[in-house]
Image (cartoon, rainbow, N blue to C red; front, side):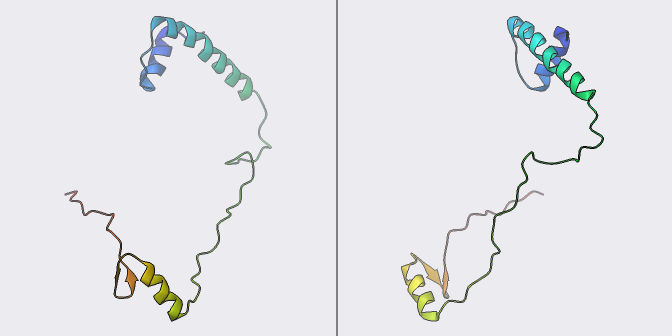
Length: 101
């Protein structure tokens, strides 16, 4: 069984404050988890391919390709914008200059 000092050390690393009652509880729980890892370490995984996810994932995004618009359509869209400048949408700046020196 994990000692109470080990549990306190783990709690400190996790930035947790534990009561004496919680330390006893986690001694049992963490010991159980540790024993399960020991069982897992006995398995032969030499033929198992490393993977990043249990289910194969595929990126579903599309390529960002500009579609040509007629100048009439562009003008109609610009007229709906709250503010424009030189034929472009004008938006508030969201990035502020910083001085990290």
